Length: 85
Image (cartoon, rainbow, N blue to C red):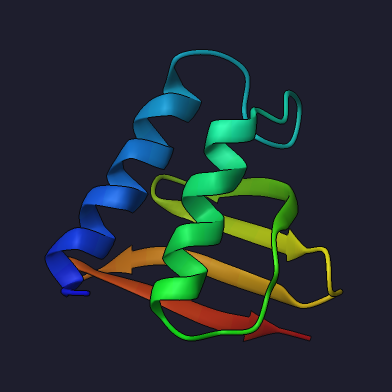
């Protein structure tokens, strides 16, 4: 899918997190699903996001059920997904 679609998915995830507690405090299924979709769109192995921590505006660290961890953030209008060790 296009980077525009990826940006939209991340924007939804960010907007949802502003509506209440952060992902780390109150794991909402839709938030985890949004991050899972963003990671999958980048063709990264994950399975499903089971935990996420907000680091800043448009910046998350997602932990996947398979043990992989990814930083998901926006830079210059593009969604970036980087593996975290």
